Image 1 (cartoon, rainbow, N blue to C red):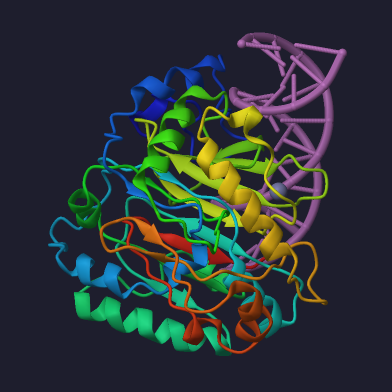
Image 2 (spheres, rainbow, N blue to C red; image 1 turned 45 degrees about the vertical axis):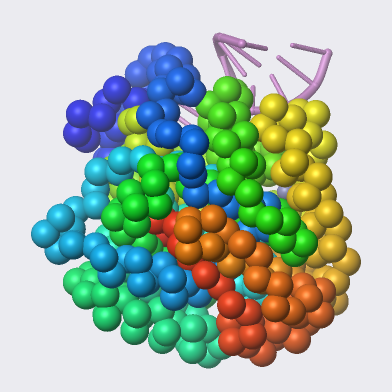
Length: 360
DNA sequence: AGCCTTTGACCAGCG
DNA sequence: TCGCTGGTCAAAGGC
Ligand SMILES: [Zn+2]
């Protein structure tokens, strides 16, 4: 609707009425890489071991958020510098949900670089409730004027977690793009080096697919402008044959990712770096490891979607760190079933919003 | 040659 | 039941 037309479809109306089309597919590409005004130097790096769920608990984040002025500015609408790359692998969340609900696997992870609405809300079943409570409380403290509810999705979904950080944080963090690679969750915790981020970042623009580089291969299967979103939402699916993981994200005109949502978890290792080696070899390696580890311990009932989770935490600096308080393997079974959150410490520090959804 | 992006249309869920 | 919205499919084109 607005003038964003520059991108591609902009009609929020929907499909039938207004073809968002336009004409050339090239538009999307135009904004590619070079356009990212983000400074990649210091970014929030999320080490390969970051899991989306990790964001769930992020006291730190909240604290930071507090700094936000907010209501007035409240409009975090305009993202400035943020780049978020997430990978998909809501380990803990997933498990939790599955267990709790008894549903198959539903995981949805949402990462929002710019918190449009600054609020943290988490709806979880019993288990999560605890966590939710925490989050909400924090929110309130921060004076988030916003209601706990961010999106309908949350409500609808059985379990979802959403964390949002304020733009401020982002800025503070440094104008760095926040890259989150959750998939990799290498419990190893390699250290979250920001270096990695840079690589990814740079690759993101280069690669044909501008989707965030999380180490997996994604194929875009749709794009739509959702009502509440300012920008069109892109739908990506993991290219692996057996993998049903989906990723949705919204990008601003600048090419910055404003929101990322992951659904499901990869049950396969990441592809070799060869394809996306450009992004960062380091990540790949780590990722690999992680994949295996996580896979091994799968739960029996779990299906190819739900996986164990690894405790990762994001550093207050903006970097994500793996909090290995417990072993991921071990933790899986027990943790997810009972109280993943309680056991695991997740710290969310990025200025984005995290959304975990279970829908599978 | 293969894979991916683009894009309109179709479908399902919900109020 | 209708309209709206979000999500997905599939054809076409590009790299
Ligand atoms: Zn996958």
